[in-house]
Image 1 (cartoon, rainbow, N blue to C red):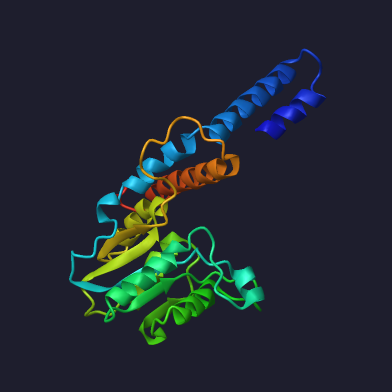
Image 2 (spheres, rainbow, N blue to C red):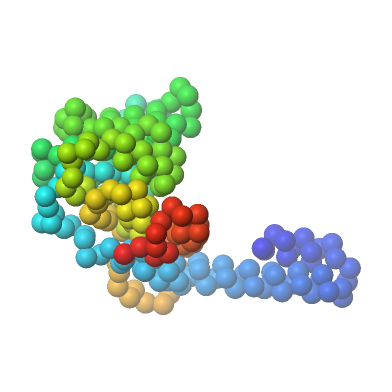
Length: 247
């Protein structure tokens, strides 16, 4: 929007309607950037997402449980390939907490759902996760790898195929707190008996004041929130979730 405003302001005829509209676009864009970049608006728009399943945070007493499902997306594949190490991004808590659950429930199988591979000669999400679990001393024979998923809908569909008929108990669903509402809606729609296990919180779920001068982090949180709200709407419209804002 800012770029469009700059272009119109530069090339439109002086005093034309396009010139004035371009200036308005610039003003609106700068205002939005200032509000998002220097206030806690990004935190406020993430709150409803992260707090939606808050009742299940660290909850492990509602069994019986049949297994653990952890969604991919925390793996840095190119960097892991170059370093030959499990390198994780800002969502690394997905794997860390899944490993903690695996140690707490040593009898449960684990499904790692994520098949993205940006480079045919490089590590996939599953390759990075396998290396991580091996280094975390988790028995790899417990892990079922879904190598076909490329979005949350496919995570649910492909995970369903890896669950055995007699595994009728709850499955821990481990993913980032902001991503949990859409994940719950999708996995419930797929008919999987899940219990949310939200991790990777981006906010404190408390009021932290009006101003925040961490420009890059604020925009990153705002981008995550907008992406998820659009995803929730798109999944509801396309029938991939039975609820607009799953609970």
